[in-house]
Length: 608
Image (cartoon, rainbow, N blue to C red; front, side, top):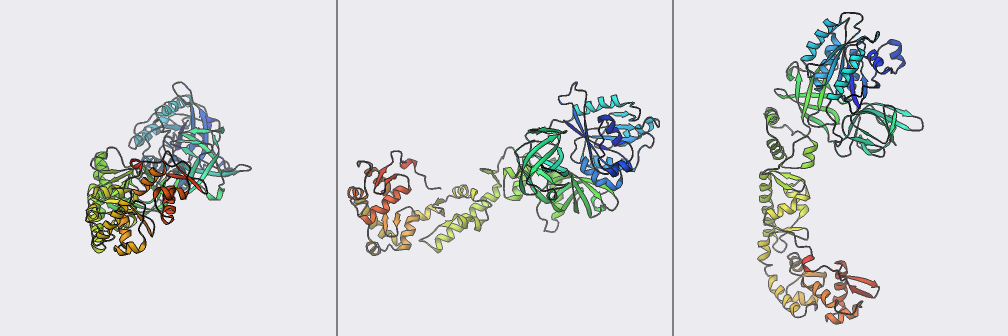
C-alpha cells in the first residue's frame, strides 16, 4: 500500500478530488457535510493501474485547509510519506497554500505532485505556473503537475497515472524497523472495544503482538487495513488496530503505539531550526508537532541554527525526526526542526550553550567514527544499543573500550582504573586483615554506570575478584602479618591429616580468631565449613575422590571412617559436597558420589 496526504488552501477541492478518485467521501462528520468544509482528518482509498506497481493500493489522508484547523492538518500530514498538493485554478495560490507548503517543507517531504483543481472554471496555466514556482523552492522541488476537474472528469485519468508514478517512486519501507504508529483517530466498537487508526511507516503489526502505549503493555486483538481483516500488516499502510484492555478515554490522537523498549522518550532535544528568521527572532513558546502529536515547547537558542527545545511532556523521539514549529497565536507555521540529539547534556557553565551549538554543527559534517567517539567521550560510557536508539551511528568502535554492549571512553577507563587502585590501596592500609572492597562499594565509590563493567575494569587494573570482593594480589602475596605463623601451624596439621579439623581452642592457641580466619578465607588460604570447622581448600575434592572408591551409596558413618575424621567434621563436609553437586542424597541415610562431578579444571576460577 501507498499513503498520500492532501494539502492546500481551504475550499480548493481536496476532498472533492479524493471523492472523485476513490468513490468514497472522506468527510465523515454531519457538520462537514452541512458546511461543505473539512474539519477532521478523512480517509479513503482506491486501486491504481497495477502495471509496474507491486502494490496498486493507494490510501489518502485528507486534511482540512482552514487556518483554524492547522493543527489537525499537521496531524494528517506528519506521518505521511508523500503529498498531493491541490491549488484551485480559479483562485490560485492563497494564504493556506503558503501555510501548508511551509508544513511540507518543515517536514522535509520530498515526494509529491501538484494538482490544479477546478480547471473547468478557469485557465489552469497561471495557477499551475505560480504554484509550481513556489513548490520548487520547498523540499518537494520540481514535481509533476496535472490540471483536473472533478466535476467534468477532465484530467482524472492522467492524475491516476501520475499517482501510480509517484507510488512507484516512493522509497521501500523498512519491514524490520521498530514500530511507531502515531494515532490519528480512536473510537469504540460494541463488542470489540477500543480501535485506533494511524499510518504505519515502518515495521510490521500482527494479531497478538505486545506493544507499548503510554508506558504500558497492550496487545493487538485484531487488525484491519482498508476495511479488510488481516493477521499481519506490513508498512507502509493505513491500519486500524483493535487493542485489548484499553479504554477509549486512555488513548487519543498524538499518542504512539510502539515496539516495546525501542523508543526513548525525551522532553529535551537539541535541534537544527529551519525558519524564515533566525531562532532568536522566534517566539520563545511555540507548539511542536511530531507525527500526530502536538506539544507546547519552549525554545532556547544555543547559537546559529541550533536550538534546545523543552517539551511540556516527553515524546518517543529519535535523531533525524522532523518537527513542525507552530505559532498558536497566529495560526501559522513558524518553522521546522531536525532533531540532532534526544539526550543532550545539561548546560551549566558560562559559554556552554555556544560550545554545544558548535559541537552539533561540527558533528553534522563529521565522519561516523568521530561522532561515535564524541558521544562516548561526553558520556564516559554508554550502551551500544542506547546509542543506536538515539540515532548515533555505531560501527567500528576504533580505540573505544568495548565491554559486552558497553562502549567506554579510553580516558574515562584509565581514570576509573587509577581510582579503583587508590580505593583498594586505601583499604589495605587501613585494614590489613581485610584489604578487600565489595563490588557494590566499588560501583558506588567510582561511579561506574553498571556492575557489568567491573570485572573487566578490575582485570585491567591488575586486581582480582574473590567471592564478590576486589583485592590487590600483591597485598595478598605479602600474607596476613601476625596470623601467618598460626596459618603455618594449621597447614602443617592439615597436610598430615586433611580432615582432622583443629578445635576452636587449638585455633585460638595459634592466634587464629574469627577475624584472622575470615581474612585467610578471603585470601583463598582456607575454607570454613562452619565457624569452627576449618580445612584447606583442596580438602573437598580429595574427599570426593576417596568417597568415590567406596561401594555406592554410602552412609555418613562410612564416610567418617574412611576419611578418618569426626562427626563434627563429616556432617558439614558432606553438606558442602552436596552443595557443590559432587554428591547427592539417595535417601535420608545414604549418599552417592556423582560420576559426572566437575574436576578441578572444571571448577570456576577466581575472577581476576
